[in-house]
Length: 151
Image (tube, rainbow, N blue to C red; front, side, top):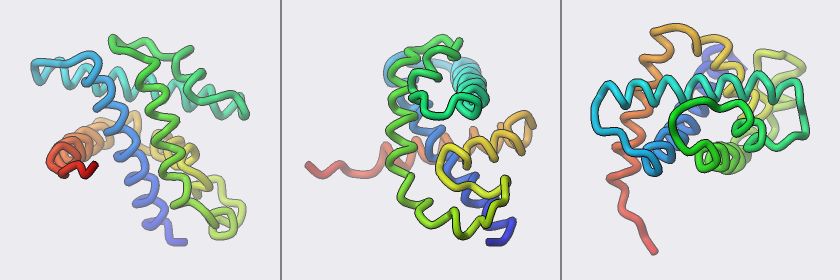
């Protein structure tokens, strides 16, 4: 797998999961101004980063539980935590067979959680990375809002 492929996979995973988390945080605790949206993005991103750091040292513990224990933002943590866990499970099939593809590389995502961790390690603290994630999140929120729901 090429490094650019890994970069695209980790970025797409992060954008999709993060947009779901932001959507759930806004659904339960709406924001009314751009400054509030920016603050919420940074809170959710910080909380996700904190949970990922802890999750790597505590394998086997449910991620939702870790998220709720480490989240500090001003929104309903439980809803976002369970949304994070569900989003990771729904994306997991895309990573089947990645173990063989990665052949032991620590910079190759073997599952959605490791994809988030890799992206956060590379870009989560840079203004460019955060700006990119905000843009992707906004685009995904609009795209998700415009898709008709079939019951």
